[in-house]
Structures are given as structure tokens and as C-alpha cells.
Length: 166
Image (tube, rainbow, N blue to C red; front, side, top):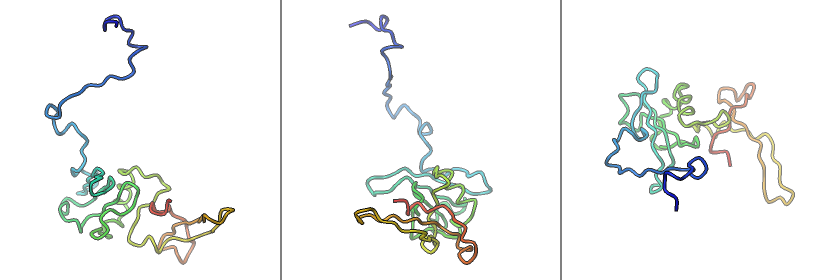
């Protein structure tokens, strides 16, 4: 075997791994998951929690004002796929605010075609068309989400909520 000095690293080495004990790395080195962060607007904060397969739960985001960080019923929270996280304690007044929804989509990295589930999502889905596979074992729905204020007007389409993407 060649010595390290004789090796041509550009051709032979593709990865270098370094093992370091967790005790040598300060806690602040790791991603700031599960810690409240300033949201960049007034006194709003957000907390991104990692997935937990033991519960099970997905990665999810909590948003609240500073004074309500410890009050679950004063927060809005969504999973990484856009579905509501804490359905029983989700605060719709918080979750309906434009800034809160925009922040959630940004932090969760949801594209423009994914909507956030809200308290009235099920009432805002319109089925535009239905088609079946040749063997009739699968159905395909063309659906759109309409703004609850536009249901009786222009029916402007909105992004389909995450839970409807199957």
C-alpha cells in the first residue's frame, strides 16, 4: 500500500470524514431547530421543530407573537407538507394573517402551487372535472381552491392545499 505522501488525492479521494465527539461541539453549532427565532416583523417569532418518528410527527413550524410563545392556543402551526400541525389548538386568527401564512410558506419552502391548510379549506375546494382510467380503477380529479370571499363571484383559483396532493 502506498503512503499518504505517494497518493494522488485528486484522483483517489472523493470524500473525507471527520468524527468529532458531540461533547466537543457547542450546542449553538447545530441548526437552530426547536428554538424561537425572530420572524423579521414586529414581535412575531417562529420555531421550526424537527421530525420525530417516535410520535410520529413531521418537521413542523410554529408561529406566534413573543408574548404567546408558551400558549399553544395562540399559535398557528403547519407541517412541512402544508397541513395543519396542532389541529386542536391551531389559532385561526393567527393562521389567517397574510404575514403569518407568507412566513410559513417561506420557512417550510413550499412552492406557489402548495397552499397551507386552514380552518375553512374543505369549503373552498371546487371539483372542475372528473376522469377515469381505462380500466375504471382510478379516478382523476381536477380541483381548484377558491378564495372563500370569491365563491359567489369570479371563482379565482388559488393554490390547492397540501393535503389534496395525492
